[in-house]
Length: 106
Image (cartoon, rainbow, N blue to C red; front, side, top):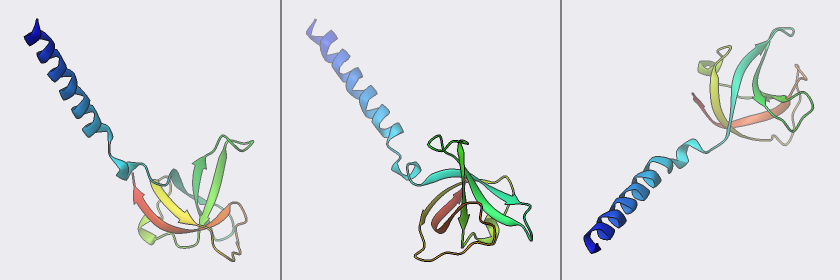
């Protein structure tokens, strides 16, 4: 009986360790996820569309001041992080102005 309990305990420990190793990827837990979108306003406005249940219509637009050319692809899913600018003026006036601090394609 002692060997059975010892084997069972080792199996539980192994499962716990493997689960923790597989789920502990902190690098995927940063920022927000959204879709780069080109709005047909004037000369076109690049925004990042994000689902947001805290607002009435269920989504928000962010207007990045520094969206790299490589990410100016309509429909591109990205993960991004940002800061709010001290001063900001928008030609599009459809979203919140942001300065990207990190962005990656999903």
